[in-house]
Length: 350
Ligand code: P6P
Image (spheres, rainbow, N blue to C red):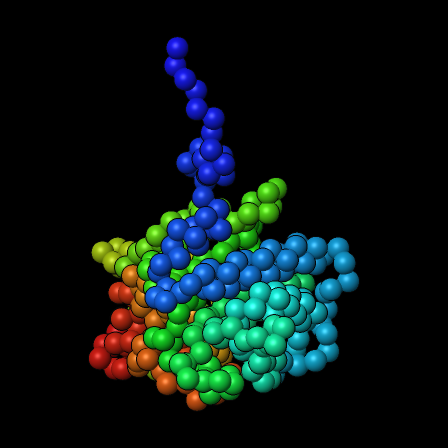
């Protein structure tokens, strides 16, 4: 008679080998971060917990009075929405409680926030945009959280803002959460990019997009064409090139612009495409923030085989000067970003 072996907890948790939770994945990949003795794994779990809490708030935004503007302005002059501040507070609370972080930089807070948990500080610095695209909250359009993780440089006793100002190349990890038709957490530790979809019925992020690779070329470009007149000439020429009819190169491309960087980036990452927020007359250094928007997404896209540029240099090589500094962003499919750089540099014309 065939002996039937009872399913193990592991095989049950994996749904008989089909489903893997973020927790299981983090434990399996603990060796990815050199020298990590579990603190980094716990930090990722703290971020995932905060993401679930913000997801709950985002899904309820239409039902409880957290719409509308909180009145204050954030470090870069954007009007703060209540959900912005809630997201900021939830992430700070989860990271403080977790104890693996020594400092947080947030779009919603002018200064870097030193963190102590029971008098102890962790070795990691987290920079984040707690709720990117929050101007879309009131109209129920996808929004997101972006985070970037650095290690406190060795020998530093007390964390200072300058310790956070490390080039993007030195990130230990980077990720984002997109609160869309489903909620996904996508992150990298420098060993590929993996996407997890939240199953609200069990409150777990499940591995749904293993080892994401972005196509070298796509058919989508994302840019606010309302700013056309303020772009530098090279960007104007590139966008015109995309719009010329040419069957051999699948042109004209398709314009898709949600107004949420995380949502536009995520769609282009999976389908192929380019997102551009260039320098312009109003924002000479562009609009997106280097430390907690451009750098984390640049780390992710490079790990997925894509490219991220300021138009003249890789974003990850920019030497940071200030916590909230901005930079121009050309990011997505490698061949498309490279061509955009050629147009911006004048190496290519129509
Ligand atoms: P504009 C949201 O405020 C954001 O930082 C990005 O998420 C988004 O892509 C961009 O700004 C939209 O800016 O000037 O086109 O409305």
